[in-house]
Length: 364
Image (cartoon, rainbow, N blue to C red; front, side, top):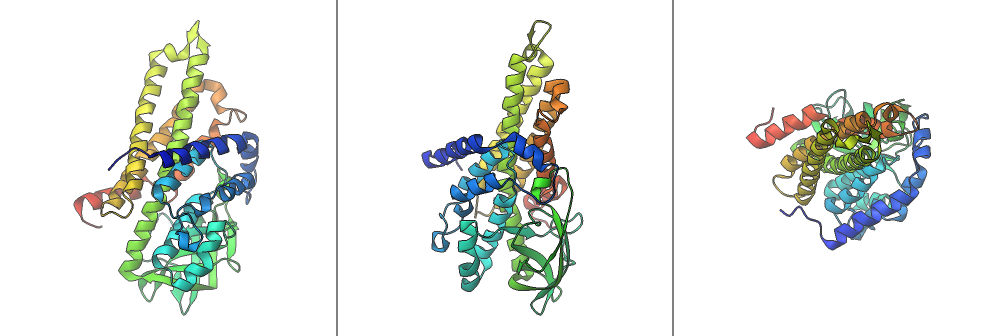
């Protein structure tokens, strides 16, 4: 598969970066770190205005009918800007669940509203340390949900969630409105991700899929969201690479730019390699959407992008020295985001295990 973008896709990438560069405020993002339950409203207004919420939703339901490649490019620009709202990824995951498993009535009720940005959605799969527990503790019976999902991104303000639950002893995917759900906000080091526990108590819900069909769909959704997250991680890692490069070329020590020293020069060169490998894997995974080896490609992208962003966040701070850890410099925005994204949709252990499963054809 090609790892090059066509002219239309390049235009999406360029315009996304241009718009976010003009509308992102580091001061605003720093303030969001100190409050719980708030997100960067100007960023999300921009996302709606630019049609990013509709990008991967079918035209028949008010969307633009594009796919993972195009949405990935927007996510990459958002990652570079450390965008202060989590809805792009989980909203896409929820919308795809409805596209792939929702009835005509469910699609008509929700997809146009998701496309317009009127409704905010999230995906609630994880329980404890398991991104996709084999037997979920949250139960769905007689049309209602009971139980708790912990640490769900976007949960503080989401209107609807696609939930991984148990139904008659089998796994199931269900759609639940969150109007009556108790939310327990979590104060984290990256508060704009809007993490919260969702406590379901006789919450009305609609069954989307169950049994092996539900498990296959849930893995596919995790893979899709992982590819979007990988693009976001690539965007953040590339931004840090450029920041470190520029600083190394201007900051002087002993009468010469610090970039002339091998310890700094080699670190930036190695980081460049990690970023480009992660970029290629992310593009390949997006292009593999719908193919038999999609999960394999998604796991590969997820692993390499996590390594690239984590390394970039650490190395960029070290290249800057003492000023790199100051509040005003803002490099910790990327450090925090790199750690948040590293555990959303499952940590590296989950994706490494999934990669092995896909390579061997065996499931633990």
